[in-house]
Length: 173
Image (cartoon, rainbow, N blue to C red; front, side, top):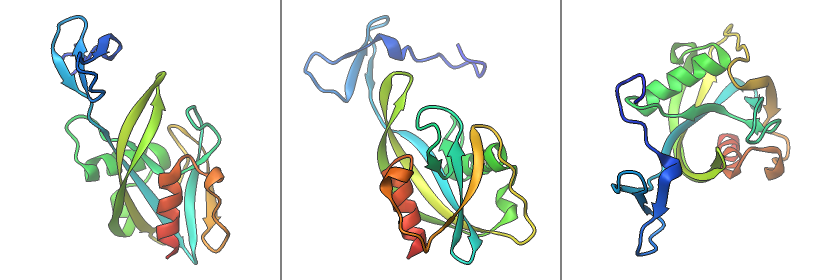
C-alpha cells in the first residue's frame, strides 16, 4: 500500500490478455483484469519575450542532457492545472501567479521509456509569458535552464521527443 492508503499496482506481474489484446492485461498475482491506459502529463513553454523560450536541460535519464520544457506527470488526485503549478515550483521555483497569459496549446501522445517499459503518455501542453522581474531557478530534475531563440532553426534531434518540437514550433507561429 502507498502512503495514501491506495493499493500499489503490481505492474511487473501483468500478462497480456489471452486474446492478445495489448491494451488489456491480467495480473499474475490476483487475476484481476487491467486496461493499459495512457498516463497524464503536462508541459509548458515559458516565453521570456522577444521570441525567447526558456527550456530545461534534463538532469537524469531518460533523455539526460536533452532540451525539455517544464512539466511532468499528473499525480493522483491532481488536475492539469494543479500538476502544472506543482511542476513549476519543483523545476523552476515559480508558480502560475508568476506567469501571465497562461493558455492551453494542444495535447500530444508520446511513448516514454520508464523503468524498462514503454509508457503511453498524453501530454497537455501550455504556453505562458514570464512576468517581468521573475527569476527562474533550476531545481528537481533540471540540470540547467537555457534560453532558446525561436528565430533559430528548430532541429528535432535537439529535443526530448517530438512533442517538445511541436510545442516550440507552435510557440514560434
